[in-house]
Amino acid sequence: MRVKMILPALTEAISPLFRPIKYSLFPPLGLATLAAYLDDGDEVDLQDEHVEPLRLDDEPDLVVIQVYITSARRAYALADHYRHQGAHVCLGGLHVTSLPDEAVAHADTIFTGPGEDSWPLFLRDFKSGHPQLRYDAPGRRTIHRLPPIRRELIKRHLYMVPNSIVVSRGCPYHCDFCYKDAFFQGGNAFYTQRVDEALAEIDRLPGKHLYFLDDHLLGDPKFAAALFEGMRGMGRVFQGAATVNSLLAPNLLEKAQAAGLRSIFVGFENLDQTNLRRSSKTQNLGRDYAAMIRRVHDKGVMINGSFVFGMDGDGPDVFDRTVDWAIEQSMETATFHIMTPYPSTALYTRMAAEGRMLHQDWDLYDTRHTVFQPKGLTPGQLEAGYWHAYERFYRWSSILRSASNKETVRQAVRHAAYSAGWKKFEGLWNLLIRLKQVSHALPVLETVLLGNDGAADLGSTGATRRESPAQIVH
Image (cartoon, rainbow, N blue to C red; front, side):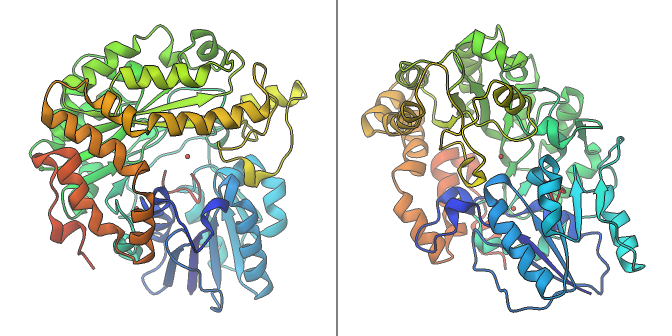
């Protein structure tokens, strides 16, 4: 059987002239995980349109497409193309789960929710000649005893961080703007691998650097503690994501740092407690952000802070106020977003009931455009403020001001290099992507950003020849 698996490019990344570095960071683990359920004799082609042009002149028997909201239009066009050629087309992912009635018009089979449990059922039905139109994830889900991810299908040299990994699914919290609740509805919303299986997958990865793509790497403290204990002595350095409260908890951050944690993504989202409460961001309520940042920095771990603009309590001052605070906290990098009510989220339901949704042009649901009517800002003010925040945070003067708050020269240099690297050299990243040399930047970045203990084995990471996984999905 000839099987083609596709991750379509997000709308803004389709241009052949410029591809932002973030689209060359990680390969499509979800598709590579599903490929592990195929038979040894199946011919499998996995393509990621973010890093390579798609070949559309082939004739696969089965086509599997992962759909995000801003890639939906592109995904449907590809699905229609292959259905016209006679292939059986499967669609799944976040957007399909949110809007199955929209997706089903372009597919022979759709999947809702995580695919690890329903995908094997489909394969059995497909091979017997009786595939169903829809497969829903069961209520009780597990990722125990997953087959090894088909990493040989991943073109490692096209990604900056090919060693990405996911050891859990979902998140234990329920923020009203998050897609996660819609995706995991009807079943357990957070679950992990067995520790020994996670360690075995880590051991399969070459080189030194890892990136955990879990929504909340510390979401199960017992699992995380055992994972980090098992990773001690493996010589790895890694990055991941966690919540404010988990980083304030005793012992877990220390275990992560000892295992190799060097950078952490944290969803601060907003500095206003009323905004956080209205968004059900309970894990941040009453937490001392500054104390958490000091605690993380004291361990030598860098922070990428995430912030959302456009909440009902935000006025025109929110942009400068947030940026000034982040700079004063000596935050290495910051990621800003315009609040976006995704279909099937509690936020979307609330905004629609209040008549505040402006349109359903999914191409613009990218956290860079205003798709709803804010309360304290005009849509234009919100978009302008978003771009202003990025420009102001990543000015050279801001970078140097923030770096000057570090205790040592070495820390200041690392801070400045890390902060400037993503926003001051986008032209260089674009060139490396176009020349298919982006993977060779990783060892250099590790040495500069993570220190001597973060320098990866160049031969293993760069020269050997990865907004989660086994979901035609996430």
